[in-house]
Length: 544
Image 1 (cartoon, rainbow, N blue to C red):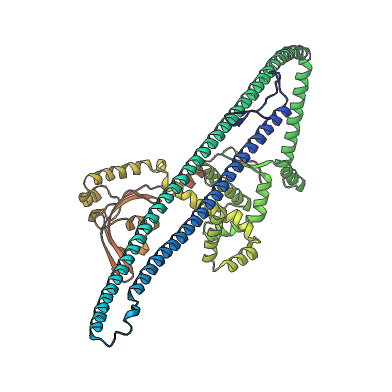
Image 2: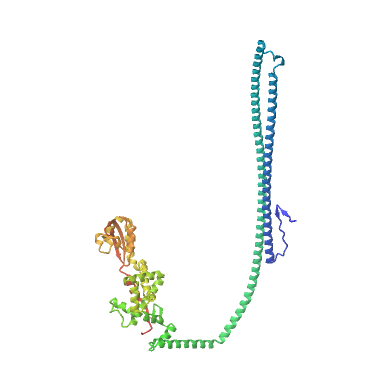
């Protein structure tokens, strides 16, 4: 039989050596513990269910027994009352009729008046007896009712007493049941605590074993490392000794390899960049080995990229240059124009890396749609670039539209870059601080510091349409009320601060009365690109 401690089955443990215990035996022990715990909880549940069912059965039996006893007592009592009433009533009736019977000697005395007198007296006496009997019956009925009421009250008292006793018995049974459930829960809690403690002890043993194995492995590794270190030191010494012996041969071989490489590179460069540069084999060689065609700010542009740009975009670049009426700036040959476009694109790519700009496909599509609308629609524009220059939509988007969209993004960064407009920004910041102290002197500050044509009128530019304003200006105006002053607003070549005086609804929409203080930077994005181009370090390696 299994032994129990405080209602919990004792789990037998096999003694095993403390050094190492096989993993299979440890898993078997954990499975045994889990199985015994499940068996214990199933037994607790089964015993609780049996106890509850037995209580319900006893309860029903007690209720049925009480009902039967109550019905039997009521029948017995009713029978007894009926018998008592019938006996008393029969005696009274018999006595009455005995008194009412006429004597045998008076049957023939009807002819004598004196006998009639006695008969009348006898009748009155009988009437009195009847009334007395009636009163006695009424008294008996009243007594019977009072007895019934007393018995009913006694029955109610007995029922109440039995009900109280039954409720007390049920409450006592429920109390004992709760106590047993509490004891079972306590036993289950102790069992869980014991199982948890055993699991924790098992984990600690495993951890100690792992640490022990790890420590032994670390010791072995340190020993191996020391031995290996000594071997490596010996091998290094031997290698450097051998290298020292063969140093002259190695130096001669390295020098020969460098000379051969330089000679080969020089020969190939002469073939590619020299008088044979127009040869198709030279072009093929330049594309195969990625010879640079142009170097812009120490960043090379490959010969293959140059050839690709020349074949695909040459006609388009030439037509665009003529359309802009810049014939005086157009290079003598198409190759010079292509080189110039490559240099500009390289500068734009450098700016994109500097400002960490990455264009999405949606940006390119939006800009292409904008160009197409200017030319009469997407279909017309695609037919034009294909028929005139042989360009598909993808090539045009990659070579032209991408850089136009990139310029737009760079322009936004240029406007927000305070380092490029430091002097103008500092002057405008000074005006902002003065307005923070006293915004009512806006007109005086406009006459003193503003640089546009409205300065003499205190910066008054009158009513302007809200629909005709630029994005940043419109956004600032919508956030202001009459009498409020904005912060510093930056556009491409100027800083300004505005003050709203009035807002009204005109025929063509809302109109706003503004006054502004303007300070010019005198430095546009196009001028910035021209400066970058003039300062760029460019090496052209090809002559065609």
